[in-house]
Length: 150
Image 1 (cartoon, rainbow, N blue to C red):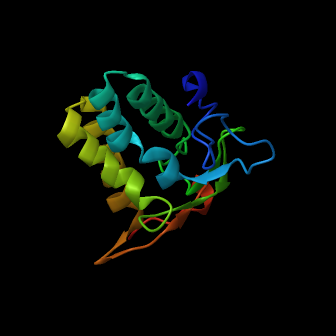
Image 2: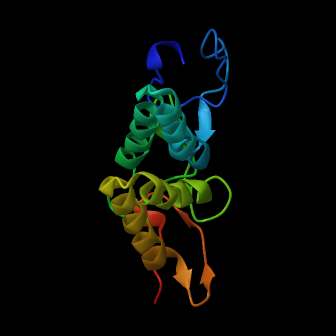
């Protein structure tokens, strides 16, 4: 990770020697960008260098700030250079699920209250906006296109 720089968020293609390849795509799924905390946190502890965990925490912070202002939901694909949602589907399936899971896993491993807060907040929002009985339905951002359970 050259100089620990991850721009606005982690690119999905990174050469460990030279950084982000020129011309590579800048879109990445929320799960890919936001599920680095466990591995990078453990790596930082094993080698005694906090830069990896701090970079993963920064990526999670960037995603957290991108949540929809009205609902708090996240999209499923983000352009890490512009900080704009490319995919505006919010749900618990592919592209998002690991983000939620890793927040709880990171809290259990490292004990940072913000990890639990973010997990609990997203869990509550998922139940509020997506639950239809025993089914969880994906929703489309922005808020004016969202449906709410009866």
